[in-house]
Image 1: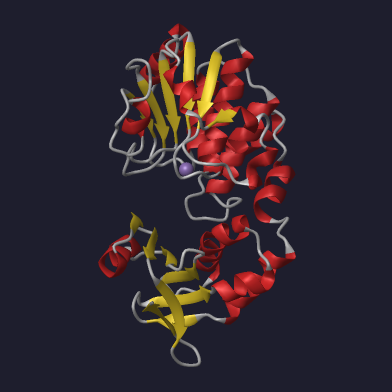
Image 2: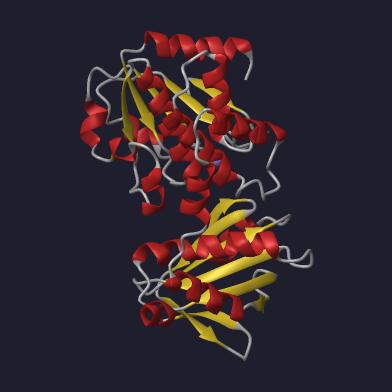
Length: 328
Ligand SMILES: [Mn+2]
């Protein structure tokens, strides 16, 4: 982010009377961490700020300070006093037109992001594709703008960095992210609390589902990779909570993508859902799984992280070690 852009954004914030912060619709630690970090920073010097999220928040993030200020009712959008909107970690802006249409008037939109594919939909765009997380983009802006740094903001920004790099484990980890993390700890962020909430602290049911998923790994010729299955029976047998079920496919596929040896480029996790469908979560290191998910099942997503849903379907074990989707 160059000095001119920093000045431009700081000037818009200085002039604003009432700021609306928006999370992405794909709720994760980075969109929540960068948004709430900005909330704590701006309110610390007296700015009037409201925060909107289009989706419910997982319990995992209950440790983020004042997370309850995030609201989902459209009433907050309609406040005529809002004169500036800021969105964090929203790669495509796809959900924004329907949200912005509910506002009392058209206001400038600042977008902080780190996705290479961001089409610069904001009126001002602070997009750094080389950054490991949006949180460290926002953090560098906060420092450069000379804003006060409160411990609550530090905790939120560090959450974005830690979750988007999987504790500096993933390939997108940068020196800048590691340096930012060290600074944020000095400003009062609690690294252990973030790791505990996001990476350990799993229920025994959750771990048993992991066990089943690991046991069932098979070669999946449809995706040309390795895959596993979580059935409805597994879930009812174990009495897992809806939140554990919702997160399992993403968590297992991220983990396997990280730990599998080089011979496996693609990993797919199939999960039977309550509504009688099969949902899939695919990850890859070099191949375009979004393209495969779209071709096979009309799915989509990012090149290395895609999903799909097949309605009226279940998983069928075809041989000892392989499974396929069967329409019901
Ligand atoms: Mn991110």
